[in-house]
Length: 212
Figure 1 (cartoon, rainbow, N blue to C red):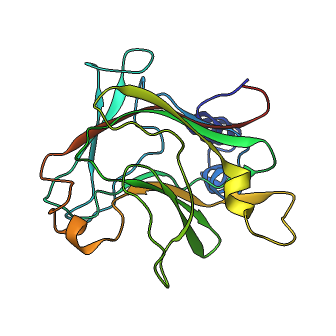
Figure 2 (figure 1 turned 60 degrees about the vertical axis):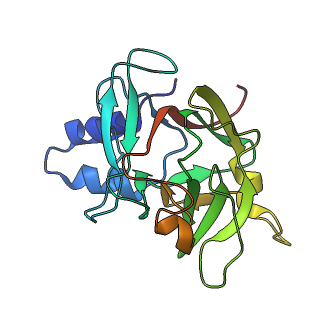
């Protein structure tokens, strides 16, 4: 059965209280990953920059259960960034990413996947435009609706990451996952979206392989 990723660290620490197990849990890719935000943020972090997102549990709205994660833009424009995890995740054929979201029309964000030294961009509500030396656009989240109501998203991760490769790997590893504003000048200045206080919600973020 699938368990929240934070429990894997706790299990290994119980076996090795020295703390070395925590480093092991971070280095070794997991095959399944789940954040339900019922008790805590899990692996979600906001980096120490002035325009990174503010995140807090919210018991006033949820796609399931009692709580979701509320993400607020602390500035006008900016990067509005939220790191979902830095735990490596092993991706193979049939691996999919699913999450529930509640996003208003003025929140412009994309999903970013780091594989090795390169970032890949999956369009969410921010749109994608190829730019040299930046995150490589590879796909869009299908059927996104930014109307302030709860919706479900699904991305076929393996197909997205190996698309266009002549000899696709049997499995790949994602090292980091984040949401952030696309690197668009007008958007980063707050002219075309992401105003001060722009808010969206995330729930039931999971990666798994196999039948739904």
